[in-house]
Image (tube, rainbow, N blue to C red; front, side, top):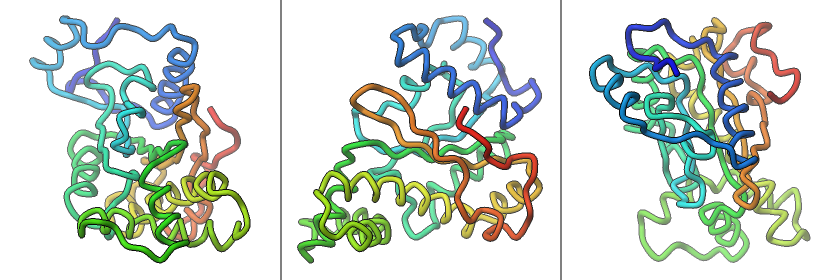
Length: 236
């Protein structure tokens, strides 16, 4: 297999998206490839990195990003936090994503939530019981999911917890995507020019599959541009 290094041209966003979708299908069928073969590691060490996608995922140990996309070292620029959150829309995580886009020339950003997320569940319970978290830092994590949790509880007030968590998980992915666009000019400009693609997905920890959500529903409004090339027509 060919190893992509820093000397290669950037990977077009649609090509990167297809690679991730196909990789996930391999993974769900149990035919994923070997990860970290020696020739890949040596090529990357000598030639530098050129990741095809930035993936913002949850820190949950049941949702290993590189594995469920069946990607090799060097393919993904992975950022993980509890609840796949971006604190306040600023800071190191967003700056790290900007580094991948501005310096490494990555053209695709994927925000992935997952089913049965503990952080989202905690946020829903906090909204319903009005109880806080045991530590200030845990509280900050939940606060970053609170908007999605409140909307889910308001929309499904009498639904079981599981349904509220499912809705909040999707809403939280879109909330993270919105923060990326609103708080990063590099991202906003890249999406507006259609050089950069930002999509969401939810990983199912029970069967390994992905539910592709596509772009944020208000993406064109947020970036202030009508998009044609990256308009979502169907999941990959």
